[in-house]
Length: 232
Image (spheres, rainbow, N blue to C red):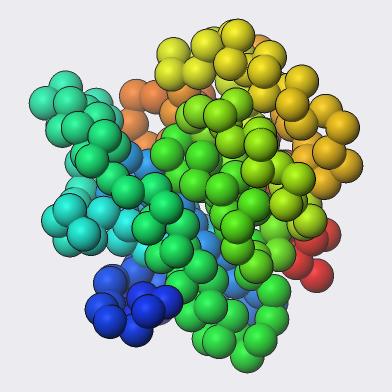
């Protein structure tokens, strides 16, 4: 079972949609799936469906709702990639993290107070890291998060497990930025990093030209094992 469901903001002054995929039986935990700059498109919905098949309640909030609800873009279409990059520049990340906190609370309530993991991709990878610093989620995974080096100052607030997937040839995250990230996080016992040598941004996209099948499966297995342990 999967469909869009309204979620109230933390302030209670508005509602935004989230794609919610439910397992057949009782959920063993919940996972909030954070979109890339392309919105809650088919790829993100498929990721939610996969988590539901694995026994989790999966929730993907429409974080661009303040700009335009239900944006769906394709990374393989140049004009849509340009539109997505423009949306990234307009998106208020602080408000986005508050919406993620609202989604975490919604998910936790849906499963009767159990644990909630957070996983994000690209922009969502950055927001997953911000969520680890600012929200009360229980475990956090970021795939090719952008600009995490600029968030190191917040990392002292991380008190729950964090897993980061880092492709070493990421066109949006230079080697210098990656090194700053590693140096800044090396002493944080809650944070684990995995490098993917020679791979570019988006290698674990669910569909499209960016996907690298063997690496995507490896990263996803690591994520599944991480959540199985952290959300048990």
